[in-house]
Length: 299
Ligand code: HMG
Ligand code: MG
Image (cartoon, rainbow, N blue to C red; front, side):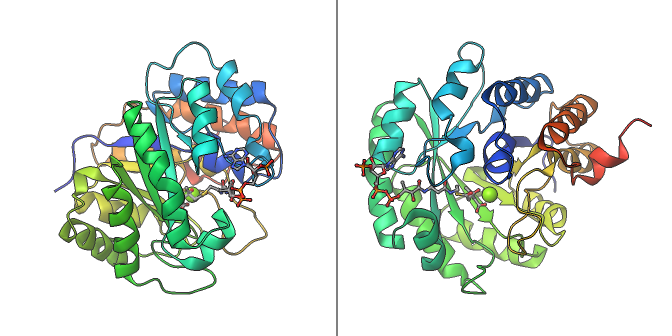
């Protein structure tokens, strides 16, 4: 069966904007987050407390949080890779964080400058301290469906890293198809393996990039396997149009169109959301890649 309601975990301000060539001014980012909330998105991953040289697009994390109106009424998680990032997040009153691991050595090295083992050692004190401070912690596992340098990624490898991160005390695990190569059969098998390893579907989220146009089909497979939290980015922003291995996430509008068509509640006002994505596309200087945003464009 399918769920009655799905929680959309909006990653546009973080995963979307981290990959755009244009660095969006902080005031526009704050307006983006505000408009997404007004469109009914309850969980919005806002920014990253990573090294500013590694992701210059999000170097204004402090300023952005300060520019957001008042304390967030609903979750506004941020990415935190290490204790330095946690210190920065705590200094700004963050209450939800996400640590982000990799199922492959190649991506752990490139994304975190660490082996898998070293990256887990980096996360452990972050999760422990965050939990002690009462924070909610999400864990990502990237390259869950394939890796641009290593090719196929054995399911056991994904399950192993996921298990280690959940054992640290994370509350939710997001399976990241970072390069969008996964297909629905693979997604079903991956989720079944997670459940078998003791990470129930109620603690899972899925994070699909739409590089190969499989994100919606993969999402449907995940919903059928019991997942009810789905990551998406407004307007499908993110990714480099010239790199074969990275495009934007599943567009939130495409996801909402499918879910509402299935009679599944999201709380999202689709027209308002699409309007926000068209506005952001103007800021980014390129049209939204979302099919639904294009289709709903008023003539
Ligand atoms: P490193 O160079 O190994 O860092 O980078 P280090 O620990 O050796 O520290 C070097 C210096 O950086 C030190 O300063 C630290 O204080 C400073 P110094 O003492 O030399 O003056 N530093 C920091 N400064 C500010 N904030 C920090 C921080 N950390 C260290 N947090 C590091 C290691 C993890 C920091 C780096 O690799 C990094 O920032 N990586 C983040 C990369 C990233 O954000 N990638 C994108 C997000 S992941 C993703 O998109 C996938 C996802 O969407 C899911 C999917 O699609 O699969 C989540
Ligand atoms: Mg991603």
